[in-house]
Length: 268
Image 1: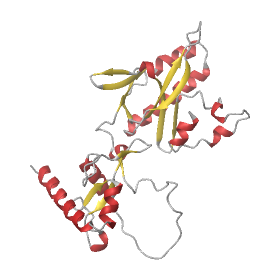
Image 2 (image 1 turned 180 degrees about the vertical axis):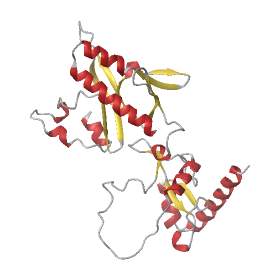
Image 3 (image 1 turned 135 degrees about the horizontal axis):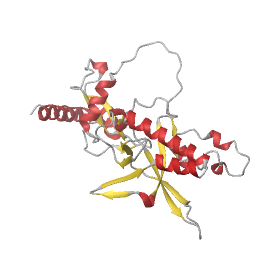
Image 4 (image 1 turned 120 degrees about the vertical axis):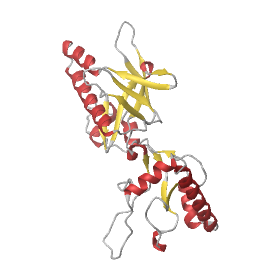
């Protein structure tokens, strides 16, 4: 679990404050049901309890019942895990954010009804909380809901300024163009997850979002406008070609035609 969270960009440094040989076995964390850090929410789900109906993959959780049973059994740690998972799922539901799900393969020891985790794997697809009832069933569904906010579904090159690849800033004199985030949002929604140059789908990030880069067809430095009529979403490869390839003028002409066609179809 520790390595999965680390790959998602979550802070696992506190796991290492453990006297045992393997930090991943730190009991303070390794038995938890859910985690949240840096706007990433992760929950553990038994693979055997995931259901499918009419092409929809989902899991129904009754954390209230699990908590009540744990109270009767005087299992305080389970109560704590259930409360924490409940709180995280509520935040994800209210913010219409993406949920990442770790699928747990189970093993049941001989003469026991208690499940043990045999293995874990992070589902590469994002999930969302479709229904939330703190005193009843909570339904999580595999995939992205159209009701989710734009930033939960898409991101571009300006969204993660805290990325480790970003060079450290220093004070310099000069000026920079300010891009309207609402225009970027509109362009990403318009693209529907596909590069508007090569028609290939954007890749899924480790956060579960669809990644495309927003591009000004006529550059801001050449008095191009910062509005949806001049902004388009491209895959990183096409974006670099649009700026630096020997055929950048041809690509720009193509993007102008694509934008005109998109605008015309939206007005029909």
